[in-house]
Amino acid sequence: MRISRQTFSSATVLSAIALLAIPSSLLGSGGGSSPSPTPPPPVMELTARDHYERGLKLRDKAWELEEKATKEPEKAEKYLKKAGKEFEKAARSQREAIKMDSRMYQAYSSLGYALRRLGDYAGSIKAYDQGLAIEPRYAEAIEYRAEAYLGLGRLDEAKDAYMHLFRADRARADELLEAMQKWVDEKRATAGDQMVEDFAAWVAERTQLAVQTAMVGSGRTW
Image (cartoon, rainbow, N blue to C red; front, side, top):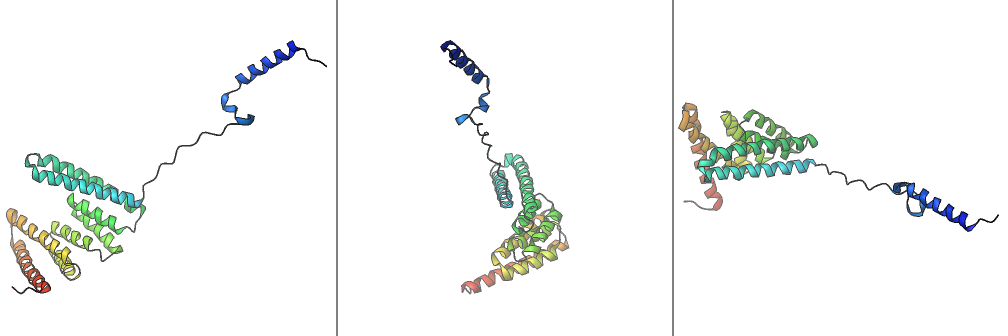
């Protein structure tokens, strides 16, 4: 059967019109279906280490604000308030780190530090205790927990911490002794009592011994 040229042309036109009516999404190379769109890359979830390091950066930011407060006394209140907000955020970050890795003793210590700077001494000591239960030799936590002891007036425990550090980490022991002297000075300026004076005498004695042992260690005798 022979198809006339007119009939063939009409069929060609109708086929073209039919193709135009098909959605482009159904047309692909070779007449097959087109590949599905490439999905967006997955959002990277933060790890425990990420939260921990973010907490440290927030702590450092709080330190910077505190430094500004000392340099600009007229704006001290504003800077210190902002510093407190940064410590709060730092504490949240460390809690997230602990939630993801309950064995990260450094995060417990950093949480304890942030809480101590916010005045939550009891919460601070609890965090330090948890970290030290994992790593009992972590000198940073021992020293800072002792400063929290000072905040609660738990002086005997602070003394014990100093004696431990004196044997194990002299640099941390010296840092704690400095914090102890600062505590004495502040208490004397507000409401000094016999307990403060007794502790002040102990701090003075330990300071003298620390100086003497440092001289012996360096070979100096004067």
